Each structure stands twice: as C-alpha cells, then as structure tokens.
Length: 87
Image 1 (tube, one colour):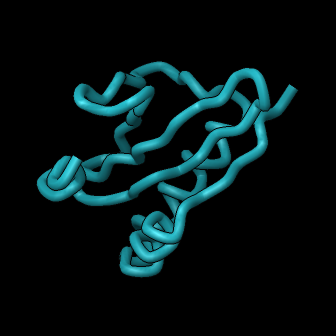
Image 2 (tube, one colour; image 1 turned 60 degrees about the vertical axis):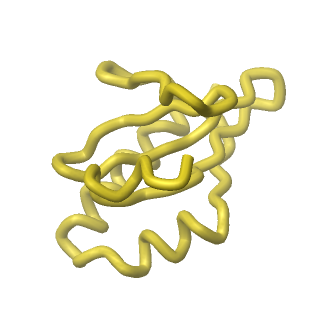
C-alpha cells in the first residue's frame, strides 16, 4: 500500500528554487518514496527526531515517515553543502 506524501512550506520553497532538470529528478524520487519510504541508500539523519535522507546527485531529500498513519513528510530539499545547516 502506498504512503501519502506531504510537504512542508520549507520544502515547497526549496523545490521552487531548483533548476528544472534537477527538479524533475527530485520529484521522481519523491514519488518513489510513496511506494517505498526506505529505498536503497536511505540513511538516518543524526541529531533529528526520526529524520531520514536520500541522495539525488548532489542534493538531499530530508523527510520523516509515520508508518502508523502511512505518511511521508518531506522536510527539506537542498544541496548537500547547505541541507544540514540549522538542524
């Protein structure tokens, strides 16, 4: 059964600022998270409460998974040099 995708206002801002070719790849990966929220290559983000991340080239998608409600919440989508600042 597929998970429901949600995003935060910060994630929406991050996505709007991306170049089109990167955005297409990232949106495809986000859609894949609905089917499998823990795909090959996922990792926990240290210092967060249940935060996970997947890589898309030099970009990272930070998200959380609520298995009980079957919801994947996208928190941030940023370049790897910037994504972990302020966590």
